[in-house]
Amino acid sequence: MASPENSYGLWTLVVLNSAIFIMFAFSFFKPNTTRDWRTFGAFSAFIVALFVEMYGFPLTIYLISGWLQTKFPGLDIFSHNSGHLWSTLMGDGGDPHFGTLHITSYVFLGYGFYLLSSSWNALYHAQRTKKLATTGPYGKIRHPQYVAFVMILLGFLLQWPTMLTLLMFPVLLLMYGRLSITEEKEMQAQFGDAYTQYAKKTPRFIPNF
Image (cartoon, rainbow, N blue to C red; front, side, top):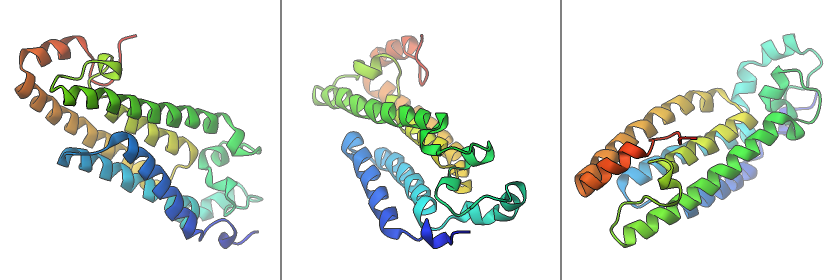
């Protein structure tokens, strides 16, 4: 069996990948308010926790290593491919990077970053003119940026689930849900009836198909 150091302990990759995705999201989200920074900070914590286990220290693998070795006796549990736990648990013997879940995760990640970018663009132009954002993604749902963050997080969970990120995910969902309600109250106070009419016809998170 290959030693854990062959696939883990790569702290340079942890820092590099975390920095790339955090800065990539920052360039699209551009937090300004305290609420924005809270949203972005929670997202960043998830990303760091993910890459620490992906390349640094495989905590989840260690915690379930006994069960994994019993259920999959010939498995090199500390190889990088085995860290893709969904594929491992389903007994997929191929390269997980080409599996259905991995490809699906790219769809979530790609569209999530696209939605984050297009949402910020619509919001930026609305704020410049001191108007309510109702164009682009805001014409379909009231909180596209929060939806974008959730899609990105879900995409990563499809690739590399860990105990910590699986625990963090519902907490982040609750956090974003509460922040969206707070944001709506502020928009109601600022725009009055215009926001009331907008909210009546525009769903909060899931668009009308």
